[in-house]
Amino acid sequence: MKLGRFLAKHKTAIVKKWCDLVIDTYPPDTARFLKSQADPFANPVGSTTITSLTALFDQLLSGADRETAVTHLDPIIRIRAVQNFSPSQAVGFIPSLKAIIREQLSGQLDTPEALKAMAKLDTQIDDLCLLGFDIYMKCKETIFNIKANEQRNRVFSSFERAGLVTD
Image (cartoon, rainbow, N blue to C red):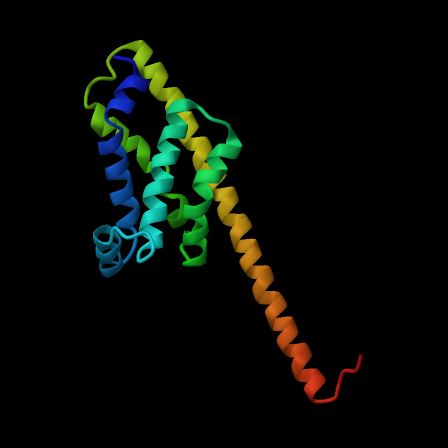
């Protein structure tokens, strides 16, 4: 069986395991809430995670371009950057997809063609991880700039109120 067809056939199980893995990186109470609450308005993080991971998996199967990957990966990474995950924690869920797929394949990688297809998929997942790191760093830079500007404005306002600065 071709790898692409196999993955498409088992998409639901793979994405569910991947989503559970991402949600389990949160504290236990938060993870329990994210798994139990289906309403996207009450649980935007869980909803975004499921939607984005499903779209990312579809993107991996179809081999879509970099911009498409950014569109689907950005919401998850952005949330994790704001929540102060370390870089490895923020993007660590991406390479874990390799293990989930291999577990699902369980011994079906016995032909050279299958091994070659899996190696290509591994490279795509690695590229996705690097892209996730780029997104994470861009988000952290934006957060830093916002904090720096806020601090600068606060100090300037204090000086202005004290009469130390004039227009």
